[in-house]
Image 1 (cartoon, rainbow, N blue to C red):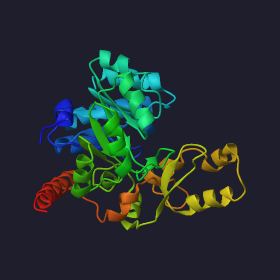
Image 2: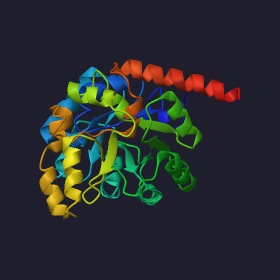
Image 3: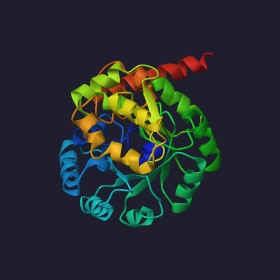
Length: 313
């Protein structure tokens, strides 16, 4: 189903596998690309030398397009960008920063640049910066999120109304029906995160994957807005945060509780009590752990079936 996004990335299906910290290594990215979608390596949880290793392994595992997601708050951002250029990565998704900082530089190197936003304001800034496409991510998404709590259902048509470049919808999308809904609202493609966490190829710890499968409606919550809003599975760490909030804590006190490597501890090492367990609201609809190719096949089958059903209404 060719459209602006499939042509831009040279992929078969308009689906992007999100570049998530501690989940999106070379195995997930290459499996996603081999399944006909765009795989992304999540650089946010990788030291520069680790990122280079993942890029090299991904190249060996797939001959299809893949990219790297780069949170621009990364302390070694210059080194990360240099590695991406040196390793001839052709697609970069940027987030958590000003798109003007790196867009022109990367495009001058022949790299396609996509920026992740959570509001119309930042979508317009990204378009002004010259990015090739935008990911608009709603409040339902896992991990770090927008402060305005705008849902995907309202964000996508509002952003679509204001921009002219290709639009990718994210947040609460894990099924073919949700993909169809997002595209009816104006998206050219969807970015999927949580569903791919619960995949065979995800680098997440098996216990975290099972926690995602076990999650029900209401088991996630957006918190830590004073630092950077993040959606978490409710566990002991989440409860500790809520208890601290009863004392009207300062940002410094919240940072002290958060500590270091809390996300790694939860998602990568499998500490379900003290770890930070980032996942989207859609976890309540994820009931199993499958290979990536099966996830993509199921999504596309459901998408096509739902499209036919809508046409008969």
